[in-house]
Image (cartoon, rainbow, N blue to C red; front, side, top):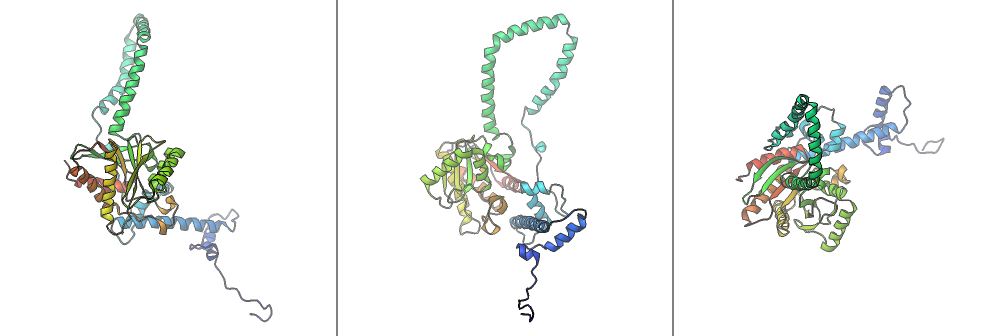
Length: 391
């Protein structure tokens, strides 16, 4: 206490500690004054700027740490930062013009390099060549022939109009059936396929998380927890695609079924979606005792439920190695789910699928689409699928 005022001397407190952040607010203020000397700067501007930069740095470090862990590295390198930014949609859009030094190249297979189906190329060539040929023929024809042809065409259209409707309907039905068997729908690209022991096709498919709800298959796998929450990336996308009807169906399933056991699975309806059913499965966490056996058991339970319902097609997302960060899921970094490393999850899941069909005597499943959302997972699963000894 001083003799005159009788008040205690207050220790100086930095503006960063007042705002509850780590990044220096005073330095941000100095940079703002240097770069924007023509404008007046409010007192809250450097605080907001420091908080935003600190948040972005924490997010990138969290995702880069996950990438380093997946690659069995104890130190974060520029390569891990590049993979972290590229595998997150929002960060990739924010930093799309940024080049990270020593980051390397993203593992990606362009759709143009993939083998196209037979007949697709010839169709394109015929479509492109027909207009020029028609123009040349029309130029050579006389006006008398044109008038005669118009009259015959009108008579033919009057007599054949009801038949055209039937033909178009049959064409639509055939096209929908072919797309559902070969490709799950628009926005899905098949990267590679393997034929399993009983004749099933295991297809690695590339798409976006937001399009998983539009997959034209009979069943979609939803990785979740014991309470069947829809907070993960796949569950959130299914809820947005299905709307209120889908959410009400999940609530009824929770009441009727109760909490799921670890590695347990339950089949429910999929109102509001092109798919007929949804299989919700409780994924084990990485690091728990016998987590690898439980993950294989989860895959087996999902396939068993699909066979009991006699389904023909099923869509498997990467169920154990979620790419959801704490920002996307609404949780803090300490509360994020312990996911499997991507290479270990790929080995276990593909091994469980092949073992299931090796041991089964018969199965109704014909097409298994393994849907991947990020370039890192695509590179890992393509390598692991090539190692499978499946004929």
